[in-house]
Length: 575
Image (cartoon, rainbow, N blue to C red; front, side, top):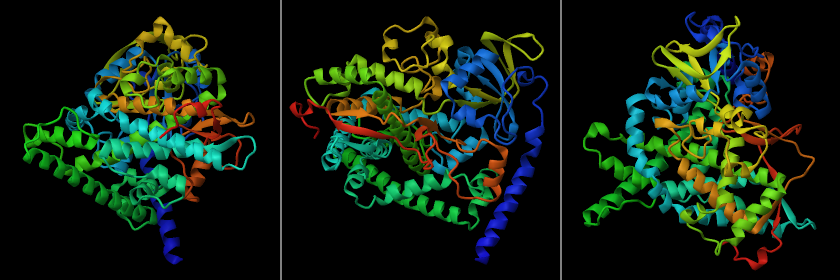
């Protein structure tokens, strides 16, 4: 007991020290030559949190109000009331995304990512990031993702079969089962990244369906992510003061133990793949253009680098495993879940999508065949537009820079501003949510789920910097999401299979909201209570997920009524 009290007191003292450390940044104004001070913007609702909640968990209506009041570019408060520029100006976004080497992620963002993944792609900057991306690009090429298609389609069929079994086992006379689709889809996505990513069987979906104990790696991953994203003072202080991570707090011990398990199993995966490639090389087999999984393709590409300096070290290769899982599992499962939510709310769209899927002659399409299904493509794009997993991209310029605006704004003193000045170290937040939501680009029905809009897009949409579908979800440029093809393939394959066999409905009394970070803590007093008293409240999540508004159970979840499609019995069963 005394040890617990001492640890708590130390945590409080360390938190206080961190607060003092950042007070200067909290109240220090931006350099006078920066446009931050001349732009208008919404008043900060919290001294400590700034506009972080609003920026990370925005609604289309809130963003529309900001953009219509202040213009596409405005001043904003980030955490600890540090000022920055928030913009949905496509010209500014294009400049930042295109000149990726001239901008970096904020230090705290990099530190938080590094704590989860180690020296993986998302945690590294500069030449290291460029090297890793060069080696990883073949592993996420169109040809490589096409090779993974059968695995992705098969996992969607396993999920459909599991839900059919849930319906059959339901005692409800209405002929449906109420299923928290978010959890199930998360396990399916984890299985996909295991098999397609590493040739490894997590068996997360089958274990969940049968009630079996989870795979050791899955348990470690969930505990690690849950612990680090709980955002207790120890994990927060560890971002600012690295030595705090080494102190004997329970959260640090759990983190180290989980990382040790993941590292051990990850090392086994890497060594097994290296042995397979070495055996193939020694037997004289001709090198394949594509490999059977992403890890094999990564290792093959790494081996082909001409000199040692151009290759990834073993710890970098290992870090990509955690990177793939966090990015591939969490974001894909959230996007598929939101698609099912949209379909459950709009029966007309659901019917149109099912009609297209049932018109396909079999239940095992290739990815090329899935890409010929126009309405499915529109549904995926519209979901990614409205339900963007991360609605902002925060960057810091390495040098002073001037960026022209495509749409001028009115400054604090009434002057017209047609370009922004950023000093090295300033915060600039690209509102990818604003680019996806704004009526200025998408028209008066921008906030409505309407897949048909992609048949005839407004001319203004062409200005949005985008690597896929005219949406800013995957951003664009040299640091565009490297796994976007795999994410789109997962969405299309899963929705195709589910919609052919099942119908989706939702209790009309439920109000579904979104939350990721700081969703439950809008006030400074709440934050201080969390910081000094309650060290276990889960405060952070990575990607926007659904939750039930007004429910005392604040966990992210989406209960849908799932039933057999009335004509499914005449269709080939999922296998």
